[in-house]
Amino acid sequence: MILPAIDLIDNKCVRLTQGDYEKVEYFSRTPLQTAIDYENEGFKWLHLVDLEGAKFGYPQNLETFRLIKKNTNLLIQYGGGVRSIETIEKLISFGVDRILISTLSIREKEQMKDLIKKFGSERFAFCWDGKFINGVFQVFDQGWLKSSELSLDELYQFYKDYLPSVIFITDITRDGMMSGANIELYKTLNKTYPKINIGASGGVTSLDEVHALKNFCSNVIIGKALLYGVINSQEAALC
Image (tube, rainbow, N blue to C red; front, side, top):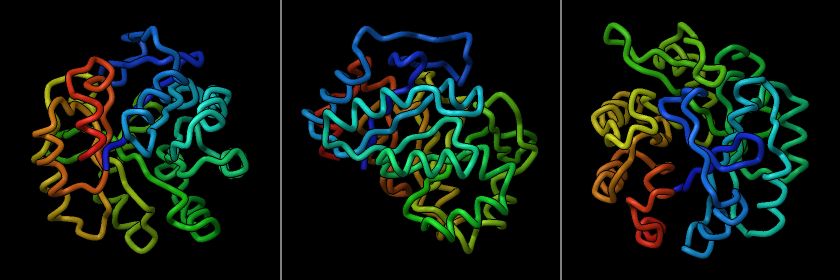
């Protein structure tokens, strides 16, 4: 399944390069119009990321989510600044279909495990994004501003009996670079962790990559390549 991504700052549609908040590109289309276009092109899900929420620790762009939810039939996974049970309960009450968790799943693992027990694994998706450091995939959090000092393997060992519906993994050296997805990473992860329902994100630039990723991943997030028109949206929606 392909999920088009909309990243939000100040309720505007933006993209970052490698998660760098100093490298913000604003798009002229509103997030609502972009979401409507994606729905008309055939997509069923939307990946909505509150970049300010990720930076400051609490969602800042919920009005945009509510507008999209009210005016489309898209299923929405929402993330960015989801770091408390109060925020999770608020998002559920607003009708978020799947909640993206990053920092909370890394910094408050016991609490996150309890939340999975309470609300169900299908309600959540984790985002474990990082890069290789000395040959080990280290996971970053807090809007990619800090290394968690935990490896993906350490996190997996903790959650292996309480896995969420999907774990999206991004090689942040590829994100926003239009340099191609790290297909070998997902191939390796699929082989090493067969219990994980892996989602791919970061750097996807062609449908050929999408077809390759589908051998190892259940979900593929595409951002810039769709916004720029590098990948045909209607063709991608059929993948």
